[in-house]
Image (tube, rainbow, N blue to C red; front, side, top):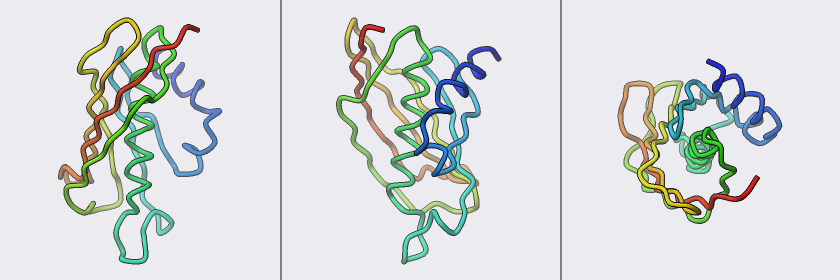
Length: 131
C-alpha cells in the first residue's frame, strides 16, 4: 500500500497523465497496472480509441513500474504493436519487468480493454539514472 501511495504522490506532478486520465491501480517492485476510463475525448474521428491514448497509457504503466524500484528511469526506446480496437469504457495497461542490468531495464506492457482483449503490446527500454 505504501508503494501505491508513493507512486501516486510522485506521478501527481505529471500533468499530462492527469489530463489524459491515467489512474495508477497497482504498484509492486518492477510491476504496475494503470487504467483510463474512456470518454468521448479519447476517440479519434473513426470512433476508435486514439493510438496516442493507448501509447500514453502504456508509457505511464512503464514509468510507474520502472520507478517503483529505488532507481530513477527514463525511456530509451519504445515500440508498440496495435492488435485490435478497444471495446468498452475502460482500458488497462500492465507493465512487467523482463530484464535489468546496472543501467538498462526492459519492460513488456500489455494494454487490454474492458473485456480483457489484448489491444496493444509495448516493449520499452529504460535508462537507469543516478538519483
